[in-house]
Length: 136
Image 1 (tube, rainbow, N blue to C red):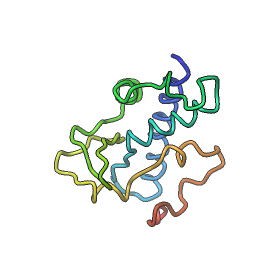
Image 2: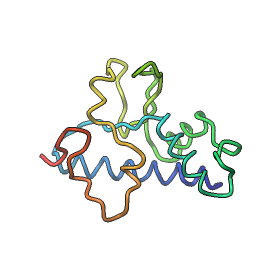
Image 3: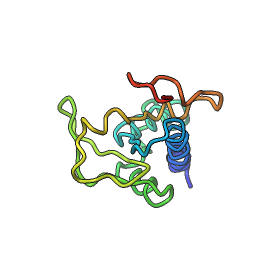
Image 4: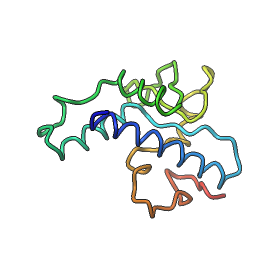
């Protein structure tokens, strides 16, 4: 695996672990999601800081490659349908299968960001996130 693929793989594994920890704390069966456009932007920013150039774009993994890594290597689920917010279309990755009937309004409260997932190992996954209390 090259650097970008390894970073996406590690993010996928941490996403699954983080979602499991949140679900256990809430005693619920919620589906947690991450926007694929956020994953690619996170990867681009991460590569900016290395030898990949000012913007990291020359060697940036395609959206298709990122989806494939998360689906086949991490066992995550990619939504078939695109969602829309603020004029932008995007897909999400989830730790469980996503129904075609799910709307973005239903999934948005369970959105996790790559930056939140990759915080230091000492971060507390049971703190208040995005306006809802994940611990109770």
